Image 1 (cartoon, one colour):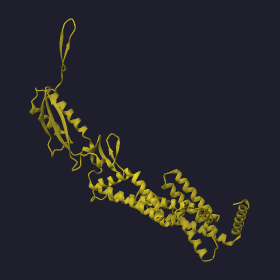
Image 2 (cartoon, helix red, strand yellow; image 1 turned 135 degrees about the vertical axis):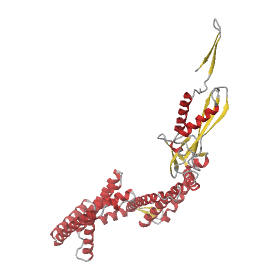
Image 3 (tube, rainbow, N blue to C red; image 1 turned 90 degrees about the horizontal axis):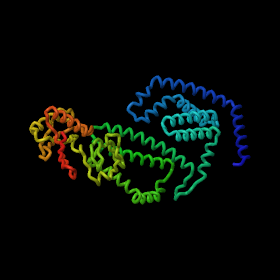
Image 4 (cartoon, rainbow, N blue to C red; image 1 turned 45 degrees about the vertical axis):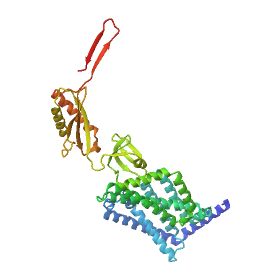
Length: 436
């Protein structure tokens, strides 16, 4: 656009503004705007007195609760935008007004303000908030000066052909905005379904996770398909692209696909589930989450092992709680030959029974397992039903109690006897050192 064209546009805008100010309909529109503002204030006050946002949003996902709260806080602006839009629509279609400049300006500014407030509260990325705010004010400004259609035509005039698909900046903007809103709604709805599924006691944890993941993928696919149809994109135009993606999946993404399929198999066969205590290789812990590509195993010391799903299919997995939550704990200890084996077993069983985490339905057992040169070896076994709370701490408590009981009963623990011989000196010396 040349400088003369810009000057002509500015002159037209000034003449139009002067005509608006001198027209009696300008002041009529101003009165309508003031009346709409008063009705909006009254309506917002009425809604705040009759509707409680907390009780209205109870049971809904977090984003929807925030959305309802923001809408209630901006109820006056929303009512004002609706009233001015309805007034302009009626007057223009009735032939009373040609354009309704003042009403259109009020509607555009109110709509931009609502969009900005929604973006500020719903989007946590500050950069995206600035982008949405800039876009809202730009659209409002173009609408006010009457150049929104011209800007749309300019964005649609530049195109690049991708097969049978005509790609324009306007199309990219529409797809980006529509896809962002659709994916946000799909995420909110999937969260809502996730809460409902996890509260169902008729489904096992594995089936719950499987349903949640399938529902999430299905919602994303449906959202993308709806957006493509809304903006007028024929999905058959992506046939070539889909073929290339298929080749890429076959070669470059085979591990990702293998992990995804393995995750579905694990959820279906219920071999492992969230909450199970497992040993995978050198990793021991409790399964805290099962994701599409990996499972998370909490070690109990702040670490979490992220193990690919494929490893659980191809490697040996020890599931301590596969059938039930009961786990066997073994404590090995020894005494010298001066101790009475029966008394030692009796003490060990009594001490194990006294621990609050040891199951009473499966009584502890102590066996004399071996006679060695140093003394007798015993094996104490007992069951616990909360292995996820740790097994080493129970074993340590029982061993400390055994040590105290052995002290009181004068039962000695085997100790090594070393013989040291010194040769080559003036006098041969033989020393036997016993560690008491």
